[in-house]
Each structure stands twice: as structure tokens, then as C-alpha cells.
Image (cartoon, rainbow, N blue to C red; front, side):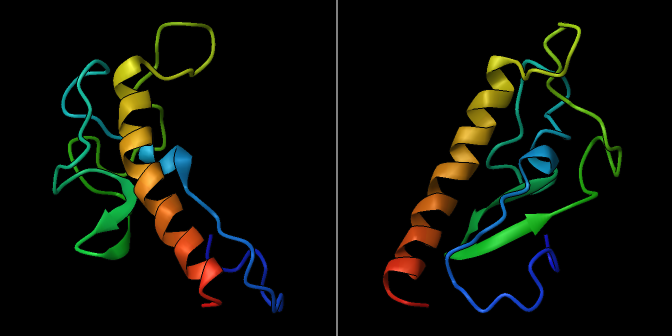
Length: 102
């Protein structure tokens, strides 16, 4: 996330850490931690981008906290709601910065 495009001078790329968002919940895969102080997040907080890693109930585990029970790690509806709640405001912010030439 921090050095993927070192040397690239354009301002039209933003990396969103979706996987990190999916690595903590509020105690079970059916309850998310959106809006909570702890947990792993990539969101807007007090008007600024916030990227929290290694926080909350699940600590620094690098596993899906919203596994739906399928053979892969598709998130439960609680995980999808967390991702939506965190991603949409970030997208709005990043788009506004891009549009303003920042």
C-alpha cells in the first residue's frame, strides 16, 4: 500500500486495503466492527483517511473474520456491510481530492 507505485508521478491511483478490513469483526462473523474504535479498518475518521492494522479482538491475525462457510473466504453479509460502510466514504474523499487536483 505504501510503496507500490514509488516513482509514479500521477495522482490517479489509490490503493484500498479491502483484505485488512475483512480481518476483524465484533466477536463473530455475523457482527461487524464498522464504526468501532478497535479493529482493522481503512476508512474515514474525523475527516481524515485512517488505515488501522493489527488492532482489535483478532489482533494481527491475517485471516478472514467474515468467512461465510463456503470453501473460500467470501464474506458474510455483516462483512459486506462493514466493507461498504468503510469504502464508500473513502471513495468519495479520494474522488474529491482527484477532482480538485490534489
